[in-house]
Image (cartoon, rainbow, N blue to C red; front, top):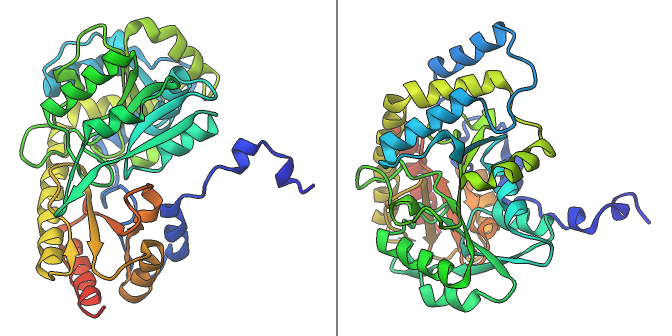
Length: 388
């Protein structure tokens, strides 16, 4: 028996990320335009960095609150009051070591080995992987795709629910498709969850990236106080803090001790100086976030208009999130195509095979970058597409 084969079967079966595979293949190439991962081209802003460095210089390097420092939990409460129009006391908020850890903790809280969680595909691959590693089963329900537009089919979701189902995972605005639930969609999904006594894990990380204006509809708009919903979120996208690995959960206060325990036995909390940077992001970062949103909308239009004009690409401008999810005529293997595109154009795209059922023929491009870079990427991609 090899050393690897002596490890846990669940650990061995954890899949390699199809996004990271292409990234590793071409990382560091000269002239590369990296649109493959979900992050922008700006570093964290100075007001965030300065707050963290000041806390570090002040010696804030000790163990701290497992649920998050009170100042950050209050800042999250204030943020939701400003942008979601809802009063949630600080007891609803739990700070985690990234949005990914927020998902892992929610999975652990909601499911046991052998349980099922229903999610919408194509989807960011980490949710299904987190479930499988935890011993639960991920059940994908494909979004409907017609004439470049994605939509839910509530009957498909209902049909996927079994006696083993414990939760629904709903990501809106969606990574990678850009599908954005309407308030009516959310009310219908919530009614289904109530009927079957299910939890909802709501990933609303892209709620501010809603290009019709304002913010995207949220389960907060339709839920009641006793509904079983946990929201998972991250500082990564809004405030250009992908490398900080700081996120949060919004959950009923009654779950507080359970969530604190799960944080304790995974990371024992987030570094206090990093949390001080997160406080600055929330309290002082509204203008920075709006600038990111404005840039994303302009770059979305540049990229999508150019691709659609080739008459060889099936896609629409997404209402939300940060991605063009595109289907190129003649592409039957998106993994092979992603490698070929990076070799021939220097543009890094994520293969749709990484996003599960329904994504196999697509490629994902993140457009949260300088519009000039996006124009260059669009020119290169269109030249490639027209030569196929």
